[in-house]
Image 1 (cartoon, rainbow, N blue to C red):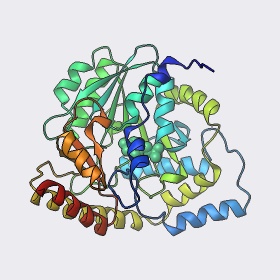
Image 2: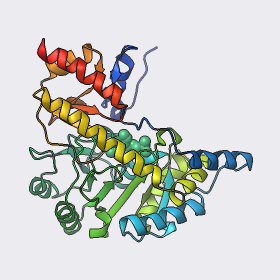
Image 3: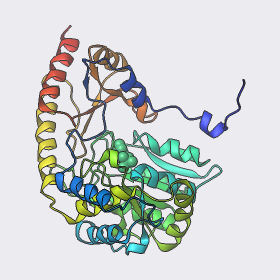
Length: 368
Ligand SMILES: Cc1ncc(COP(=O)(O)O)c(C=O)c1O
């Protein structure tokens, strides 16, 4: 039977990262994953169990339970100096759904969506799924957004996707860069979509929320990375009431609501003890130092990642292939856009022991 599929879906590729996981052998060391290897903190699990036992298992309001939107609103105030009211927040199935509904609500037919390149795999594909035209924003040699180039590209664009700390580079943008981008975008009538899912994993620098510098900003975040909750599928977006009014329609029809149980767990995450986040951050930092020192000793030179849990290392695709064949799953730069074919992303969200094993295998490949 011959089937006809939508062109906009046929035009996008299945994520290169997924394909690598599927191809990885059982003894591989997996540095391909973008997910914390920590378990969700116990008090968060307990809140979910309590919600189940209390029968809080039905649909919730489309935009999320009031307790959670109140908790997120308070979090925005204290952690991000942002004043979003609970009504300006939609709780979603992960940051992924938040990004999806923003694209669906804000762009269509050939609209220009500026995406960092290299950047998180979903941005360009979600823009294409919305019928829009993703435009690559190049990075500087030290892997930060090229602000001057970004400004030039803003003419006639609709959205600018900002991601700090960034996947796949680990770069953390300065206050000056974020402010300059937001202010310029405001003047140019471009809405900034600020994906801040790695905000708590920064090793020395400070996180600046784009929403501090202008009104025309949509802030996206999730419990996924901060609280090691990737499988709970709990994220959110916050924006002005007019943007929320459009986004909620997409959310209503594609998702109805985020999982009720995860929403109750997320209340515990935001209102409970934040110490586990600090423990994870300190461990990521120790792993970053260990791993990057090991890579440098092998002659691989690259800017020290400032945040998230990735090293983005210059290397030719042939070397990337050899490392994968030697049993270390890493992701070729080509998975993250068109601008970084000669790089590979290595995630250090895995044990120190695994990082040591990976370094041994990479050393064998390089020294052979
Ligand atoms: C930058 C960035 N944004 C969003 C996401 C998706 O997050 P979630 O699991 O909450 O959908 C990821 C996941 O890797 C990411 O790296």
